[in-house]
Length: 149
Image 1 (cartoon, rainbow, N blue to C red):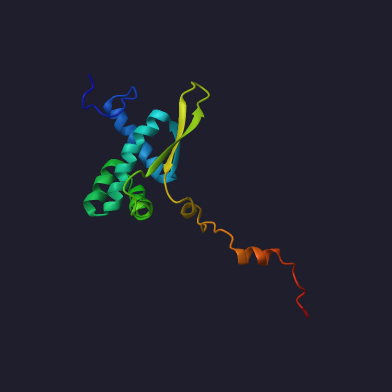
Image 2: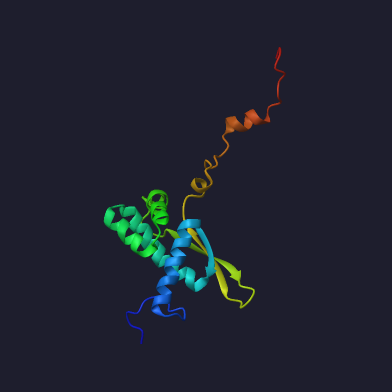
């Protein structure tokens, strides 16, 4: 029985699993999006969300705990300065897993894992506005000649 045993083993030793998730979290922080198997992506959520929570705390102790796991100064800096502030008003659910298809070699189910954020914020664009009545009337009027009319 597996009472109180959380997490997937993924056919790896504990040291290999730990190294795997360190590398996956590092890649997710660097690139913002990863394509991996379903099981790894679902398990990666736990570690990535923990790192974001540390980033939101922002104190020295949290920074040291994040560095202990990630082991990259640049990634920790990016996590605390760029990624975590985007989620300051969110209570959880910092990542999303999207089914992607199957791998060609062994038909393993693939997923994309990425940070959730406001899509307009990510693209740097303003959110779309609904057209108002005055705006649609302006666009439908024929253009007048600049001189004399």
